[in-house]
Length: 443
Image (cartoon, rainbow, N blue to C red; front, side, top):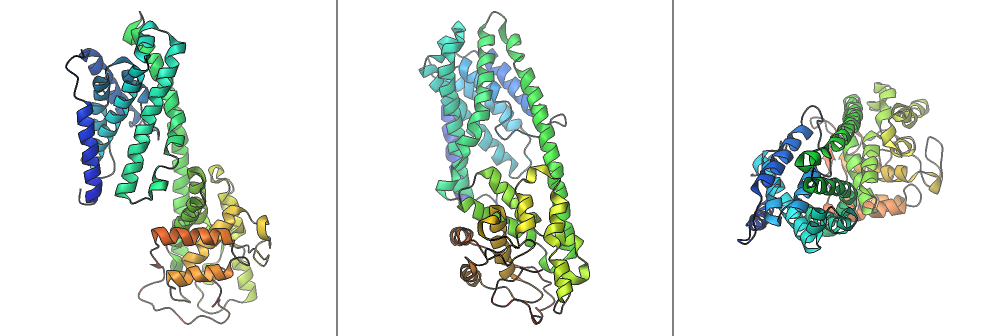
């Protein structure tokens, strides 16, 4: 709890209080407790299965929302909201504080299901479900799903803005768009559950709807296991680079962070932002093919040695070309040392010939190189580094990417890092090392 800001605890407390008020049943409403208990047990069981070794991963749009939405279509709003509580409070949570996260998740689902149930009933959806009138029931069900999605997005954006101080305009950006389609599918499954529940076949028939959902969850888990394996490979490659080139330890992760900041400032979607983060992390992986003595050489490099080091983008591209989900990150690994004026390497591309991902990583790479202590230079202040990037924009760097980084750093800040050994002071720059132009362009 100590790590959670006070403002975030207050926000969670307010949401929990609102959820408790939603659970209070009106005195004139009869609650079918057997249905509440059955659906709550079903949801809690599905939560456990979704996090078991059989599945092993939770869907980003939630686990078994069909059960919750079926409750919203079948039950009064307070009773439907109650269905989510046991499963949320008993769910497995890996990050601390565990209790606070469970309570937050329960309160969030209570408010979402309560809103969905109220909207569904107000639009006459319950009568359509009882009558089995599926075409007419689609309208109220769709509105209920939208309300459910909006409430979850509103609360998620709020906690980002309050707990992590994410700018308000960015906290909610994309939340509804990302979750609406999968939740709509869950809503359709929930509607079919509700219709079958009210049919002569009863609740047993309704449970059959969950079978294809279980299969889709298993397939989804296999995809994410494969993706996790790729990410583990990426981490191993980056650690190998850090070990080999000790003076730039941590550089790859910071370039990934700066690339992500630029991409977000440019308004790229989250999937592309993630790809550019991978591009930044992997941009120097080709150094594994460069002799260690050259990476750690104290003196100036000979022309032959420099040509060997300048092969690292091509080495890196060969290493990552088989990782399918990296997409345009592979082009960034190959071209992040190209310059707009055509004097870069490996191919001397000019202007827009350079892939956009490579132009992003080039700015992020130079910025971190300038703000980190190296064997041949001390870290420059952030303001000085940004001024140097501006000076070189148009010739070496894309002005759009430079301006995006300036805006992002101005709003979120940047923590300069010391990447050389603290026990050794920076050595005198070797003859021929860059002075006025951003360092990091060659090593």
